[in-house]
Length: 562
Image (cartoon, rainbow, N blue to C red; front, side, top):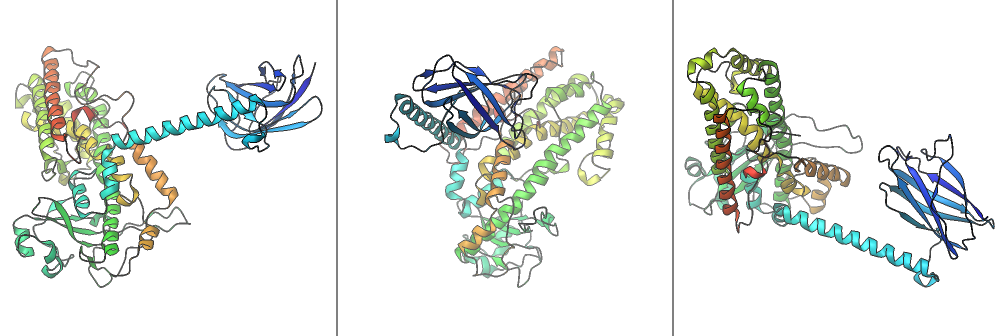
């Protein structure tokens, strides 16, 4: 019987080998062999970098070998395999090499042709013509699926498409301070700071009410965003091949007659001087554009490290640990914790002053219903303020947060003790809101607003400009992140913006930690109120160019989860 010698070369990269079963079939002009298991007794086949040979015996001559078919079947667990190539020695002594050079990750059949390049006219047999046609059909199908996925992604991430089209415009720049994924930095300017020596002559062409700058300030039309926290912070130096830069800009904004917030002055450093000019909308196009890009880059850093990581994730851990240490499982506040899912969280005293966001109507609604839910639960178990004071476990919980989480800092806004039901309801409301709605507002829009790299550069490769009139488009491109960092950035913001497969959204509590009827009624009331907010937001977003849905309760997970 004819015998073929099959030599299999496995890749040498990490984890290229496999313990799965590997089967091979030979297809020739005269017939096709049965499926053969490539396996040697007492031998570890297909190790990383290995070259293994096997004898494949067939009953009849197969003629000229046209194709080989490889199948991988799971042994213990799915084990990917990088196949370099397969060499077949025929009974006549001829050698045919079948290149693969790809990962085989599933149990689908992989069909390989020999390595000789062929034009369509060179394929004489029906076997090769059919294989060529089928390969192209499969690739075209994959391309269509990929294209449809991209289109769907853009459709479901409509703000991204809008950002890509309008990111250079001043109204989009200002809009993101109110409705982007970091809408917590903008403040009403009550006095132009001395470190930002903006004059009336500089901004006169940007003001629309025939008022002086001082008068606009008094009327509440001037806003400011200050990235002072970044001043003096060293940029990342872990990559010796790429020098990276940070800036601590100050941005002055104006509410115009269309009720839109637009930038009117940007200084890229904290100390005024000849080498730290104030950039204006009236400057050269690229000067003004690069200044705005620097602000967006600084905003990205503050958003990720402070607004997102610190004020939702890390502080949530403070509450989670304090709850674990101080509240037994039967305590009603401990039961509220698991009902809210994984963590509790808060943003400290900052949340009590959250009053300037454009989404404040939705925030007010959510906060109000959160407070109603908290009040309902508290009134069930605490019939008076005295009961609150006498709850030693509650007081230990509050003290744990203040002493160990906030390090005893009064400015954090967290009390050392809670003495009234009203304050306890407020405290619990802040916890629920921050770990759910606040986190959703600053997390799930990251792909929409930050995946277009010029709109949210994660790093800058050139220092901020120190004079006007010198910026070119080439300098802007060189300042933006390189392709590698851009890919890392895209992957990160995409992953962070995704819901979990088993996500539980606000008001959905499948685990019944409470058995008392009054608490179940309070939860049902809470869910009904949230449904009303969903309807309101859905109606409000109809026909809007930029719908805002991050605070819709059906898109808010019960708690910080990542």
